Image (cartoon, rainbow, N blue to C red; front, side):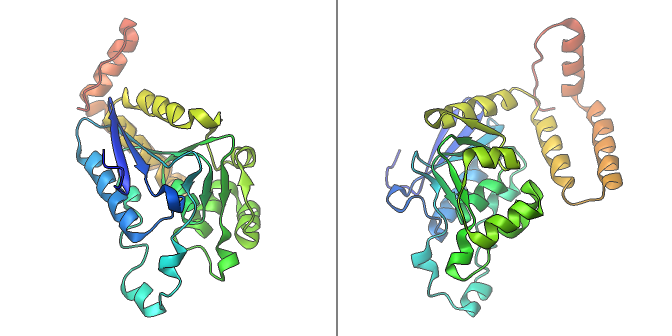
Length: 259
């Protein structure tokens, strides 16, 4: 691996691990870093041997926000005409395969927003989350004002976005932002274990479930239920459904092939 690379990648069986790698800047999110992250994500997305992805940082920071030194002199026309953020910061949203954020240390501003773009979040006991953009005289720009109320409700979202305060791991779990809190030195290990468990299942079913859960945020309940029912019906055309149900009846472990 090249220690100067902006992201480092590893494979663990059917799991692709991506490490943000700007440790001196606490993994501050710059355009070059987000370009590199997007390339890594799309590489694993195209890889038929990978079923699940994990994004992490280091023990000090998942990502301590956007790179302010590179943002501060932007003009409106430069940000708008260059399609800042939309152009390259949201590749994780293009992934059909599940993506887990493994958060240690700080996940602030853009770092918190990146974690929320993932499908679920595992964090260490010492993790800190915040949307501190108000302290810079700006609103969130990568989904902080939209995903926090969906994850935690309006009152908590207003609290965080209007004060910019940090929220610890325990509050984040109580509020519904993170799925699991684990020992600080076990974050990546636990995320890989969770990802490996997912990866043993049918990749077709994983992608269907991810798509359906995401639809719950976009559609009325009746529409979402109809989509779920049609996806459920469609699953009976797959070999993995036949294998999974046959294995259950025969009391054996299924072997899924994504067909």
